[in-house]
Length: 320
Image (tube, rainbow, N blue to C red; front, side):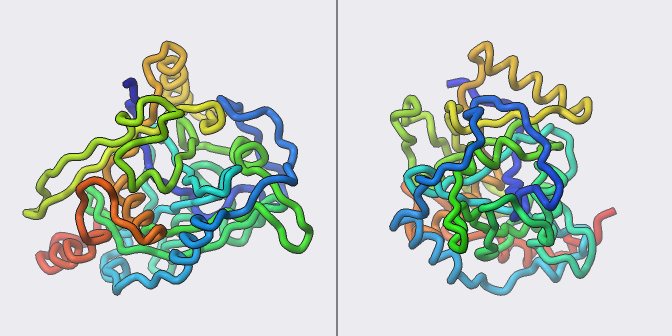
């Protein structure tokens, strides 16, 4: 199995996808269909996906340490879900150019969702909260889940959102994989790709996408004296799941070019989802599907207890 070497962030792009009243910049398609015509036969959420979204809407997270740490220690990511042609949920992910900044909060008053959306706009062109998406798309904020602790000791708040593809008022429907995602103005990533959301609870991947045993690997490690399950998922590169941006700066150009060369040579056939991003996706999927993973995992969601302990030790002070 050949895997992309780039670290990728779950920078779920803040809840909305770019397009205010101005036109969206066009991405160079990698393997997406070139057609951007709207499809009136796109299904909405199937039964299992609708139940998953309802659980996320109803979810109330426990008290968080997020607002108790300095602004310089706060960050947020957007977990953006949408329904595919079968009504199954998929999640939008990115491979970042390696040295780009993280999704840090800008001010004391900025909410996690505002942070996530702002960073998504800067990173892949998703519009801010006050900016509309092209019809018929809209983004619904579903919930926040317990904060995670990054290796850099940032407190990261995951924000979960649903990309709606159907406008009930007009009856207009569209496929985001052809009408929206390929048109995003991705400025800080090497690739935008998607993965089946429910598979982040599974040991085996879809056999139609290659060897199912290549989907998941995991191992236990220790961090701050606690057991820490490290997850790795290897997402197959398929014809309808990857978009490459038109590079806008030298670092991005180098990252995109290197990835394209590796894929063309057959050196990369899967993208690796790992670290904090993988743990966040597992946590969100556990809530959404009210199910435990098939693999070993930490029983708690997020790292609120560890964050509180570090705060008590004076570890999470202002970062300059």
